[in-house]
Image (tube, rainbow, N blue to C red; front, side, top):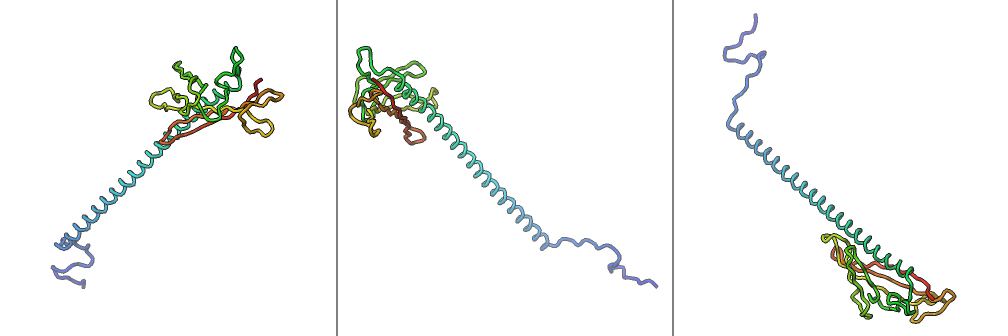
Length: 207
């Protein structure tokens, strides 16, 4: 005969019935939910912090790149100025119509702007033909844009060369090629909070 179960007993073959949530079970569930929510907030804060650090890093890289580009631009401009003077030193006639040595080629053992002249892109000319003991330098501007231009100062140093040992000397020595002069042109300008100096040295002969 089949086994009979009481009406209030659970049939083992039937599906289990859901148990009502107790007060303790509800408290545990709420605590777990709050813990998960707090953990999510902490993760969001950490992600925001990491993202902020990344953006600051990108910003610093952009600032550094701009400074490097700005430095390279002014170096190129300064190099162009020095090459202009070097070309004049090697190409121009050394004496005037009366046979006098012009200021640009006169002996200057210490850096000076005496004898220098510069005309900018706006046809503004600045020159020094009076102060032989100048130590400030010829003031010029590097760059055409007002937002990126920087003030600069140019110097020259010209001395005869001793052909026996290649050193500079106070008085010119006549050689088969005439007199040998060495000219050093330098330029200084501020960039990124420091002073940069560039120079170029050339030599030429004159009779």
